[in-house]
Image (tube, rainbow, N blue to C red; front, top):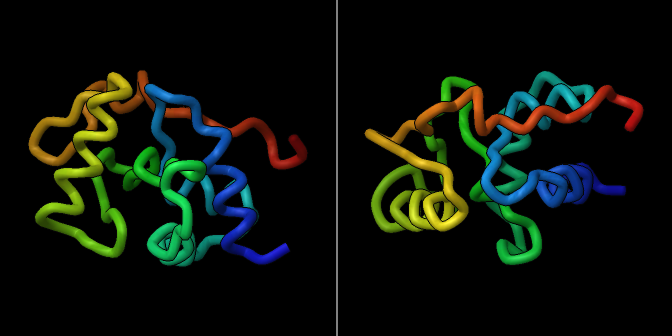
Length: 108
């Protein structure tokens, strides 16, 4: 299975109203190249079935969306998160630890 498909599978497991991080996904896949996770999500062919808007930076900042790091793309990401109950203020997830979805151990 391609790396990007493994990333997409994990994204699909993040429930509505929760977020994960590029680092959490990388750790789950056993890699330290968290930017590679971001690059795979940037090329996400199906944002509807693979909710990549639920992935943010480890410090709670929004990160990128659809290859953009500012402007309309980021506004769209924030809007999608808001529809799911995730609040964002100043481009950062509010109550980050409360809405953070942590994948179970590597074997699940």
